[in-house]
Length: 212
Image: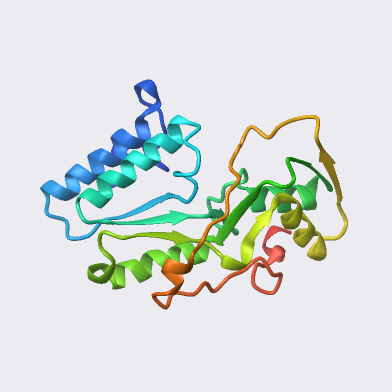
């Protein structure tokens, strides 16, 4: 089923009442059911069940339930990073690295907010892993992230500075980050199946040369 039939990249919430994601993914799920598609894997949000503070998170939770109802697999992704042809620059690691290389300074709000991270190539690896083991994992939900990277914003930017030293960091308590995600993730369920990540936040794996 082509994503373009339901709004294109990322199923944007462009329909009435902001429920485009749910309507689109539900439509795809119905197509899968009616056409007897044997497998369905949903990329959900690792923070979707933390605090539902937006229509986007609510729709993601509802869409995941639809997928599981037809025996699909849900992989709840940590915050994704890494270079790609259509990379997003609003994701935290990508944004911080870009600002370090271009603006030469980063201002951090709510520095103790914590998140988990995963490289885009490990996301692709996880999809392949689930396809190859679909019958074993169908109906299951897995968190997908780096257990070595449950980091606060401060820890993340300081790790980046180890490899890109020539930028300034300031911490501000005068404003709040509108993105309220602050959570600790366990990836032990996926790891217990034998899955391991290939990429990390360390320089020799995550090549900052891709940005320069």
